[in-house]
Length: 514
Image (cartoon, rainbow, N blue to C red):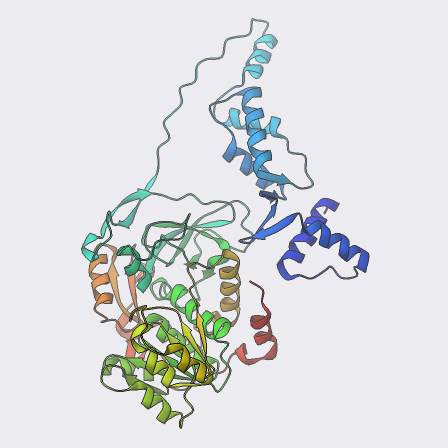
């Protein structure tokens, strides 16, 4: 590795974790720190000013092909391309042979620069020929099947149509989607209440499972074509193909089908984040999980058992209450027919819940505060019950010395999501394998053509667990959901403790700088 690349690696490492290379003295540390002031780390990408840092010739050549101005030839095209590249990228430790790449690019597309044509003619002993006028072919945009809606509204607005197919960018994995799953955010986006983040796909869908169809330039992981994977998305899951940063992709455990895996990314990563990064749940704590029969709720209950915490749940029907108990809830309460705050206080001998995971919001704030333990943490990650609050919320919360913590996942940075996926893959994903300590709870499977009916099913609060959408049929996708109905999908005994409680792991989560 040359000196320039070695220094850039030191900069990247320092900006990532704030650590200096081993053996550095005080002078070397100050020099590196001053040098790092010229760089920033944004969404996992190292920038020099506002220019992206490029470290390899392969990546540089790929960027050249992307930015090469196709209407131009010879010297003109070379100059314009060089200007475009140098204004956008910062080259490290390499001499960029743009002249050579221009010739290769023009040649591979059946074009000859004017200077090359003149040289060839002179060598043949004739006069230089005038360059023939090249007729540019109109670029054909490839399309794919996806769920569309022209205007915000109800489920009837959804239909299956054609949209432009995405192209994998650098360090992205191109996935042929076999299955996706519904989330409450999809319903809000369809209604026009929760738009996709800027620059992200406007197609619905926050998770997907399928097979790798292509790898973008610079992908570093041990991925291969045809590998079965699942991914966390910011949008685009209700489609035939999706391109995802490799940091947000996870291999599918061997004992799970693609249908089951489609129910994991959004719900389980949300639950994992709420428990370990936001609430920082400790073993033995009482945790009240609202909407315990939802996708996030069923995931949270199982993860809490894995962490040796004690999950309590609320739900709206007797069937849902029984299901939450079957997957590990120590107690479950019907929020429609009983005062869950009184029941929680009775169960905990007046102590209350140390943590409340709340996706309901306004309609139950008084009962939440009533059953919140002293110094408890109330984690708000949704507002299905309304956003407005009337009454002495702050006074009552202050009397409990309570913390109100709010969290969303979709709007987080790529770097945060990447760290979350890595921690989940290391500490939770292995428990989906042979022992099946953790298992996604699936309510039902709809075809892509029946997407409107799937949305109605969720809006009517009929589901117990995740609603999966089968985008592409195939033998590898078939799963008998009766083999794991919600009421018997996992063991009722406490799960075997994982590494969540070891000091090294908790310190990693608590000290992580996102």
